[in-house]
Length: 494
Image 1 (cartoon, rainbow, N blue to C red):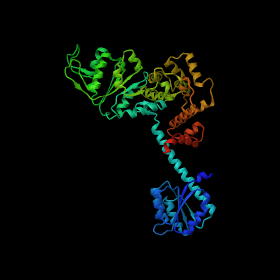
Image 2: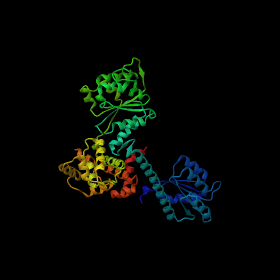
Image 3: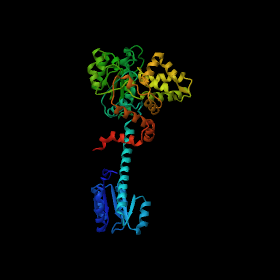
Image 4: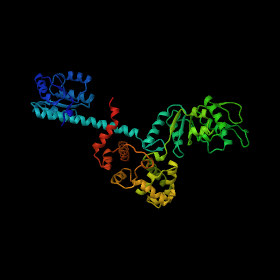
């Protein structure tokens, strides 16, 4: 045992000066910081201003005995280990205190010096272990809280999605307009719904409008509404999205597909809070929070004349960019399993999961259509599979992969050669392959980052059970505990 282990603070309490003198002599060899007081009152006063790892108290003292003192310490300073120095006549009182859980151990008077030192060192060890366990519980609790397998309607645990979740959580409470970008099929409407759900407007309407799905001649009516007779077919008054969303959130998807002239009217609405229905002469007002999205590069859309620059900058107060699925390390299998459960129930099919080969292909396929493509592919596989496992052939058929495509993905899976480390990690990720981003991106990442991601993935897979995760990773639990604490160290250094 190192001296560092015993760099602790110990408080001794005894009303006999000779006992305190003897304790001073014995404990000099401990390299511990020791304080000595002659009453329970002085001990409690000292505890109010100082922290001690261990308190050692005599049992028989005037005014307040050791059992009562240690009971007070247990109530107010539970992290302090409690011991008693006792004469043999105190045994009944000691046993009562032990049974009530107020003390950790005791040393009989007269004591053996070596035995006293051993007992004190064991108490300090136990106290340090207790603090470490509390720290680990706090770390794991925060890890579980901060590292989400899903968020609102999103499914995903990758670092890329953790960043998106954090952006949404920070943006949602404000009334600032949000501009969401990202490839098609990445979940831009889910982001808008999450912003609305977490906002102060959550009890008001959420209205979504796809600007690319509505004919340009009908778009103004869809946005602002119309009055009866405004145009051929307008047989009654109609409330547009602006009126329907009043008090809530209006999500305009594929904003760059909106007619450039209508964009000018939308800009005026955003600036003034007022608009006119088609065919009406009076102004209407609405209090709306705007969330807009596009799968095109906004700057390119501005250069092409498809998006007004002033409108873009008015709406782009908060920018959120959704990553492509191939950039979401490990998420493809989380999503695939989620979709499998839903579609198997919907289609009344007895399917229990994906074969290891199918899992490997899912993890390594580029998914150019992103989450939407994966969802539709899993639906197809559920419908067509004979079960009970979704196989490589099922996936190949759903994605219309050629033998050459399958061979290329298989090579990507192994990196040219399989290894025992690949096999060990397969068990952690439910037989899925190593994340495709390591292959699809021509980059070399620090090993420490990859190690951390795999450890976090293993802990998630085991629902926070570090011991089970350590078993799957074939390391000791203490190794994972040390690594988790090292990641969180800055947070506890204040």
